[in-house]
Length: 245
Length: 245
DNA sequence: CGCCTATTTGATCTGATTCAAACAATGTGG
DNA sequence: CCACATTGTTTGAATCAGATCAAATAGGCG
Image (cartoon, rainbow over all chains, first blue to last red; front, side, top):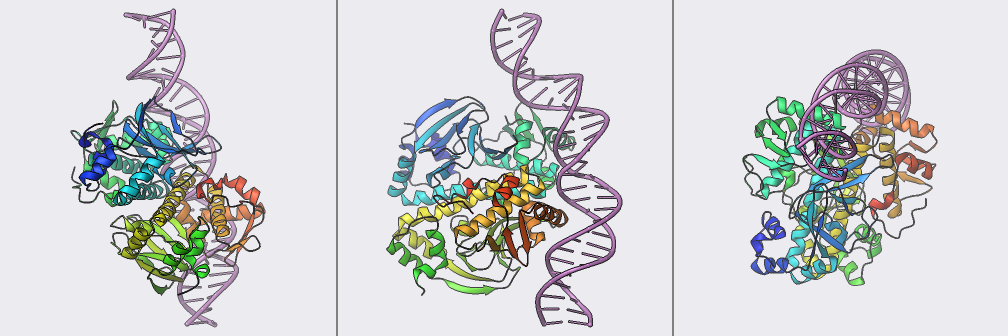
């Protein structure tokens, strides 16, 4: 059992709400089993009926769906401290898949444990519910992104979001974040082809807005990037947090 | 106060879960004030911090967001019995707007009343949470739709969804549903131009899959339409319900 | 009737895809 | 430690799905 501060779940929740000591203790004592998974592995698949949720401890995961003709749409990216399949708590079947992008350390928590937690600490129900609502807010923004922005703005917008989400959990150093997402994956997330993702990235680099190499994304001109993206961070609901970069 | 069966909220929730008599009573006695609103009116706007939720009693509502350059993306359609802005219960600011498409009868319920309801009937928390999770599932499917399907499939898919959602609450008669959504609005929901929506509708009509006139959508060939759309109803999480049409 | 909103049609243009191939980086096993 | 396979990035050219522009038609309705 680790100290509350070190616990990725506690750290993440504290980045968006206040927790009482009892709540923290309850969270840290949630029974879970940890598993290491390689890159590009499915964790749960469309159609599965899971009986546990998956907490990302380390690495990048994503949710996605495939079409009949072999294309795929990535619906979200997930980093340490997030529970990508929390919805399985109330929706019996998975309507999409959850997979790793990089090697991951994952913790699995039985639905029953979570239900018990909520019974004993009703206030936490709202905290986790809120998490799923922010997920949904991000989905909405992505719909907007894919449906109504041109390729350059689309890409810029996604990068803005990932940057800010990393910032919220203290993963920004020197205006940079770890960025192991490939251009193909960026394409699957934005509804663009690899080729076009590549060209638009060059465009953004050319405008000196960012660099992206060796799996590191560095934002050179935050305001410029926001401008190109038409980015408004409201939808992330990171209340109170200072947005300056 | 009306009988539980007549109450749109109760009817809708019963279409997806079982309610105890006490729960039904509690729902029916939720304090709410009713307001009639004309077509194309905003109910809550991006940036607002509402203190009540809006239950649709009659008519069509939608959630949408606008871009800086005047385009808009519709993120969802809502019919009687739904609470489109339930998320405001846990997210202080609206990250999108909620508006009417047709004239609507709306009931407003104070956040406080809902919180009280959940305290007294904890099981209902899960029921409403689940509602927001299904919303999110629909957002995901729309991302897929907009990002990865061609115009014809996109439109067909949206129509399949609306048809099935109406069916779930008993609003299908003779393979037909009321359909007051304009082609412009369909375009805003699918990320297509009005012109192209029109052409794709003609395509679907030409294949004898459906008719759409006088604000009535009739599905002539459900299997064919599903096929064109690549439609799989799993994401609607209408469990147990017979999907045959 | 005349105004306003929605649908339809035709012609043109363009952002993004697709196809094809080179190139770079990373890792693997002999 | 190098040859080779694999995966990711980059470049160029051709093509196309869907947007845009422009205008006609068709419904409601005060």
